[in-house]
Length: 210
Image 1: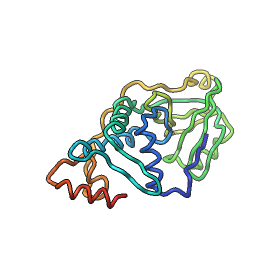
Image 2: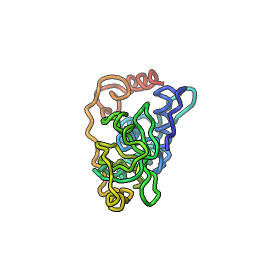
Image 3: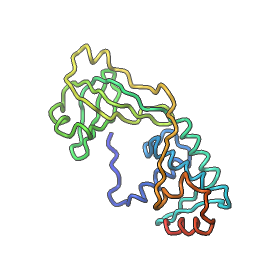
Image 4: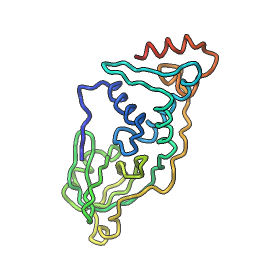
C-alpha cells in the first residue's frame, strides 16, 4: 500500500516522473492528481506560438509536444472531483512518519489514506482496531479511488462495518482550476504566455529551467 518516493530523486525528477505519466495519458497513474495533471496540460499556453516542443533535461530527456500535451489535457477534462465519504474497516497498517494508513473494508478491499491534519497519534491510538473514517476521497482520471484524506477517525461498530463498506466512486467531473500566475520560474510561463514577452525571452527562460 505504501510505495515510497525515491529519496535519491530531486523534486524536479519527481515532477518529471509525474509529467511523463500525464503526457502518456495514463489514467490509472498514482503519480499525479487533478491539480498536477492540469499543470502538465498548462504547457498548451507555450506550444503553438512559434514553439514546437519543450524539452526538460535533468539527467534524462522529457519532451513535451502538442500531441502529448493534448493527452494530458484530456486527462484533466476527464478528472473527477473529490468528495466527502465515510468508510468503516480495520486499520490494518500505519506509517508513522508521514501519517499514511491502509484500511481494510469488510469485503476485503484495501484503501490507502493519509491523516496529515489529524496527526500520527490519532492513527496510533486506533491501530489494529475497527474504525470509521470521515474524509475526502480523491480519484484517478480513470474513476478509480486514489486515496482518502482523513478528517476524523472514530471507533466503528459491527453495524458501521456493514453500512460503510463500499469503495467510493466519483460523482462529478472536477472543475477547471483557476490559478494565480506567479512571476517567477515555470509558473510565470504556464497560463500566461502569449503576452508581451518576445519569443526569445520565453525560450531563454525555458533554457534556464532545464
